[in-house]
Every structure is written in structure tokens, then in C-alpha cells.
Image (cartoon, rainbow, N blue to C red; front, side, top):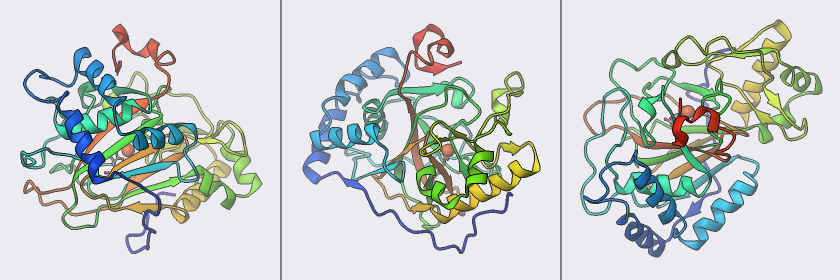
Length: 332
Ligand SMILES: O=C(O)CCC(=O)C(=O)O
Ligand SMILES: [Fe+2]
């Protein structure tokens, strides 16, 4: 089941994307001035988040229209690729961090951009047990973590739904590229259940829709939550279901479930799209219909490695209120 995506496999490149024009890009840089600078000390404060929410409604009209349309219907791929977003103003980008659990604390242009865009899709959230609950997280390779099935690793990262084990997992994952992989090998891979479903036979779909699977939380979430109940992988309307699977953490509970899960993985791999993210590309993944992963690559830990900034959003703040102590954006 855990045979990996073949590195030599030719993965089709992204076709559809929304390109930000040069004029819009300048408009966005000007907007971020409201969120950066000495009067905006820290991202993780109610004041900054309120300012980011306010600023987000002034994003260029064509971008707002694209985001609203994606929220209405994530399309067959469940992924939206925005291109040519600004990530810096004048100052050069610092060296890529190479430490575990790296996050952005001080507002930057990139952090302001990814947060503002995600705030037009939903409410930005984080998890107390992941990157200490910081809202803007760095996705960078970390020395000594090469083999880990996390975003600090550089071996192939299996296709997954973000935080599949959590009842209040994000509805959207935003990944903004601020430094591209100098080797060009690292590709964000996405695939959707809308593309994969037609490749599955009726029996396989039926097994995947039954509670015959268990998903483990990552070790950082501790052991208390680790006994989860069995769940289906396909949830909702059998014609257009949501998908709930992490091929590194979801386990089939019987043989037919194992066979069905292998067929699903194969269908995802067959319909997968590879995104070689460039500086200013923001990939937004609808975490209900699309899975994502990453090809392997070779970091150099010289400050010039690939660097993405990640922000989560969900649609319903009331649904998660029980997990957000004090009503803030962090799920406990
Ligand atoms: O590195 C990537 O392209 C994706 C990493 C990932 O899955 C994540 O940060 O959630
Ligand atoms: Fe992920």
C-alpha cells in the first residue's frame, strides 16, 4: 500500500491558474503597508488579525471574484493556483530558516499576503499542538528530519488531507512560495476525489464509504486524542463525496478496506497534478475534496532552500468554537 509515487513518473504540470497583473501586484504591495512596519509588532494578536481581515476586503476585485468562485465550487481539481503575488517590498528575503517548527511572528509582506487571501476564504486558524499555534508557518526542510512524513522532511511526502485525524481540520490550506527550490525537484502534488472517483468501481466506492479506516494523529498531538473511532474515507453524497485520508496515517481495518485504499491511492496518483511552485505562487487546496503531497528533493541547508508559508482557514467559526478556548483562532 505504501509504495511511493515514482520519482520518474511524469506528473502533468498545472494548467489553470489566476495570474495577478502587475498593476494589481502594486496595489497589493500598497495594501500590505497597513499590516507591516513598527506599529504592527506581531502577527498572532487580535489587533493584527482584525487589521488583516479589514485589509483583505480591499484586495483587487478580480482576485476577490476568483476566491469567491473557488469557495462556491472548488472545481474538478479542488486547487486554486494564484500567481505573481508579491512576497517582499524592498528588503531582500532573509535566509531560509533551517530549524524545526519555524514560524513567522513579525508581519512581513508575504505573511500579510497569504493571511489576507486566506481571510477571504474563511477564518484563519492554527492548532496549539502544531507549530505552537502560530498562524503563519514556514514550510522548510530541516536538517535531521529528512525522512519525516511532515513538511520538515525532504523524502517524498505521501498524499494527505491536512490534519485528517482532527474533527475541526482546516477546510483550506494555503501554501505561498517565497523561495523556490533551487534544484527544481520539489513539486507540490495535488489530486482530487472528483478526478479520482470515476476511476473506482462501485464495490471500491462502497468499501471506502464505510467506517473501516483509522487515522492516527501525529505524535505532537499527544496520546490522549490518539484513539480515534473508525471512519469512512468517502463522506457525503456518493456522487460527489468529501475525502478523508492520509496515506501515511490512515490504516485500513480489514483486507477489502486495504485493497480499496490501494485502489484509491492509485487513482489519485494517476490523476495527480505537480506544481513546481515559483516565487509569488499561492496554491490553495480545498481540504475536503483535494489531497496534497510533495515529491522528494535534496536540501542544502545553505539559506537558499525552498521556502513556503502556510496558513489554514476554515469556513465555520461556530463549528470549531468548542475547540477554540477564549474564541481566538487557535484550536486547543
Ligand atoms: O512542501 C509542500 O509542498 C507541501 C507540504 C505540506 O503538505 C504542508 O505543509 O501541509
Ligand atoms: Fe500538508
